[in-house]
Image (cartoon, rainbow, N blue to C red):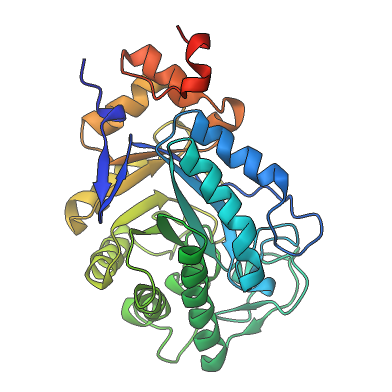
Length: 339
């Protein structure tokens, strides 16, 4: 029986064994606050690879120390991080999965030590520290940090790079009129608000020739936020600059209540896929194999990103294959347990 969820997916010369992706999820486990991989990270990611997913994505990995969401986040701001990250990619590859890294800068939502910056000096809420509006020199430094992170990702053996421009972190802040009140060339209209992301994509593409994903928050859940039509245009322009797939999420730019249910982010993803003519990933409370299969089979999404479902069950993909009647990517070491 042909099952779309378990069909291979090729993108820019990299073939994923199926359409199941481990979504980036912060683990807050760098207890030395140095951003370096510890054995727990290797076990965490490799177990999902052994569990059958096609692509394992790391948590948001900071391109600058002050760009961490917390002091316990993974980092890639130094060449010293490469060896540890290579342990992750080697372990996942040995289990049959491809690996991706989400490059990130938390912007005004950083709770790590150091300077807090954003497009404008307006805090996310009163719990966050006072921040500074970035100068053009600050923006250039952050763009260079994303570029250097992509170069290190290549050295560490990753197959895919994703730029985190969602959830109200730095690149997302620049895109949104709810966080970006600049009057220079990095603010104002949609073209100005897209400029930093455009420069970041171009810089990364200068050192990275593999698949490049982009995570966007397609709904900001607040009056005056970025309309979906702007995100379609951002995706269209990003594709022209070398982005291969949009990872479609939502929220996080400003405090907001979200009515979350399985598939609640899919309609916006479908619009981006159709109108920007770019592959998309669906994400958000996807847990049932039949629903994941529907999303791929119906053409709603090219990839399905799973988060909490994979925290609950590292072998979700193997169980899903059995449920759907597909051939499961069972590691030979475990085969007798699945007979």
